[in-house]
Structure formats: C-alpha cells, structure tokens
Image 1 (cartoon, rainbow, N blue to C red):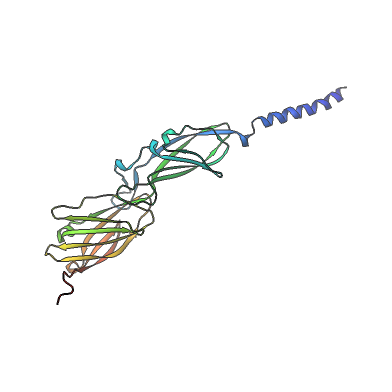
Image 2: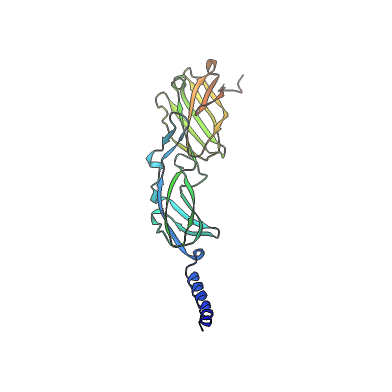
Length: 258
C-alpha cells in the first residue's frame, strides 16, 4: 500500500510543482524603471579650457525633454515631457529610452539639439533606477576677431557656411564691434569662411570662400580671424588650434570701365 500511495502521490507533486512554475514565469513578468535624468550644459572645448558651459537659456530642464520608449516591435510609450513619465509596468525585455529636445538637422543661433539613447532591460517583478545624462548632440561655434583684424579693417562682414548650405554672416565695424554669438550646426559638417571688408584706407576686399574645418558633436568651436601676410594679402582663420590661410583680393568698383 505504501508503494502504491507513493506512486499515486508523485504525479500530484509534479502537477503542483508545474502549476507553481507557471504562475510567474520570469520571461512573461512585468517590471518598471525609475529614471534619474539630468541635462548637461557643459560641452567640449578645444581652446581656452577643456570644457565650456552653454548659456543657461539653451539648456532645457530635464523634465522638458521628450521621451520615446521602444522595443523590437516599435514604439511602446511616448511622452511630450519627461516630467510626465509615470514609470509604467512593462513586459520583461530590452527597451530603448530616447531623450531629446530640439529639432535634428536644423542649424542657427537658436538650434541647440539635445539627444541621448539609453538601452534598458526591464526585469520581471523588479523596479530599477536608471541614471541618464543628456548632452548636446549637435555642434556650436562662435567667431572672434583679433585686435589686429579689427584695426586693419574699418568694416567687415564674415560669413560662416556649413556643408548643408546654412550661412551666418557676422557684421561689425570700428563703432559697432562684433559680439560673440553661439551658432549651432550639425555635427560632422564642414565649415567654410568667406566675406568682405573695407580697409582703413577705404579699399574694399573679398575673402575667398575657404574650408576651415569640421564641426564635432557636443563641442564649442572657436573661430578666430587674424590679419596675416604682407599688406593684408591674406588672413588667418583658426578653428580652435588649426589655422587656415584665406586669400584676400581687392574688389574693383568699376571692372568694366577703361
């Protein structure tokens, strides 16, 4: 009888164990993630110091970032503001959390673009905390002029053009000096310099369009214009620590006259 009882009880034990195992299988459970999000205003700088800080007006609050949560099947959740993220229960698996502010591929003085993608694995029946730091995804530059340049040219209009065709012209004179203005451009784009100026003797000249370097992501580039060459035959444009000679030609006011 004992032997029969054991044999009969064994399937019951196996059945009970099977039911217990099916109750909360890890691969179908749900979990959640709490985000510890911040936005960095510091960017790399290749001159002056290792880093520079963006003006506060360009740095979004962490809660104002857009958030998109997706997995292999596509978008799972989307939030217009990270502040609205409610740490929802999500099925176990791998996800991508994308944080952004601004519009990619737009260039200009107001075109700061922040972006960061964070892979996160949701663990069944667990709450995890994920730190996230979002940084500037595009590049920023500003133009400065040496005293030699400003003393040599009474008026000037320097244009910086990107590979995509966006152009920003900086104008100044002895009475209205140029102010440093940050301009945001695509990371990886080539930068070109051209322009016109009037010497203190009244002669008008043109700066030949010249490639001066490539913009890097999350970096503040300093473009500096200086006078070089005998008689102002050229100027030196320095992108960070890399100088480039730009040819200067005089502009004929009446090229058709004899």
